[in-house]
Image (cartoon, rainbow over the protein chains, first blue to last red):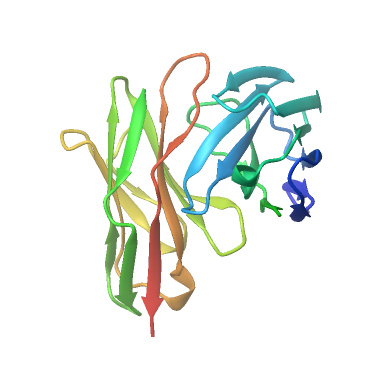
Length: 113
Length: 115
């Protein structure tokens, strides 16, 4: 059983398109996250939801919009894709924040042509 | 705000040799400390964490780390590495309190174990 699953695993698309990445967790956690990992492996938090409420909203372009229909799902929609959006996007979940470890999905590799 | 510095971006080491991956952090508040490992084409997995108590913590796969408050360090060690330990290792911190206690990651250390 996959604990945190993301779809799709690979996403290749052209500049200007709109795309979505889906994330689901079956761990019963109440907090979910989106991270961006760039080509140098640097990981940066983008968003976090706790019980469907947005609690972390880092400085990302407003072309990125997270949506949490329920505690087990956190999707990421990206409008008007740009070359600089090419990266690996990771979804993660945890029970609460702080000392609780986060469980990560395997990532979505987004390539913009 | 917190910051994490991983002093070595790449560490090559021969199989069965010991290894230490260095991590220093900066924070104006108390923090929890973590090490995560990322194998190729996978997400991150928790190796170990320091919350409180004994400063030497043991994790999975034979790894351990020591918290040093005076030096604000949390170095990761393994006495004898295997080829399968080849991966990217991330040190991370999270504040004790606050409304949005996110993880702040270091830039990662690529450990390559050579035969």
